[in-house]
Length: 111
Length: 117
Image (tube, rainbow over all chains, first blue to last red; front, side):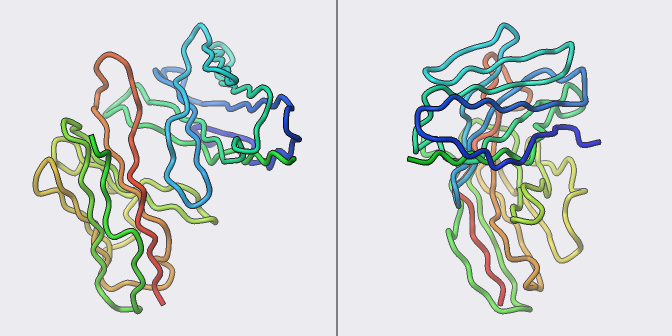
């Protein structure tokens, strides 16, 4: 089983739609959680951290469910510019505490 | 801060040639990571350093790949000899490990797109 699992998509949605991605992780001792965004032919960039109480940044809402070991990202009022791959990332709580990246969920927002 | 700086941005080389990729991490970061990304295999961690010391190189594909970090502000990834299957985007990332205060994860450079013909 992969340490971080995501649905690869693609998710095809029209502009203005609400879309949600889920991600599951296997290590219950994981300590930090993130969503990264990667545009085509560019580097991954931090979109937002995910806090235990859930957090919101504009149109983006992230939730963490430690009991079920899943993380979600909700995007409201989708824009064309939201088209990208969204990577779920977990920091291990052991050793050098490196980040573990999911393989990403591709989002395509169409006019 | 200028972020993580990688060079070159693009490299085209012939099979059998030596290729050297370079990375300058963010000042103050103590961990540096080399990743490779392809459509087929996604983002793969090749090696990472903590305080200039290689910690885990289990992701390095084979002996043709080597990485060094002679000081806190510079690292190289070398492929010798290069092969067409090495064609990929190579990313360098840096971070403060363990994180102090807010955890900002890793910051990636813009990558080196390597094509071996």
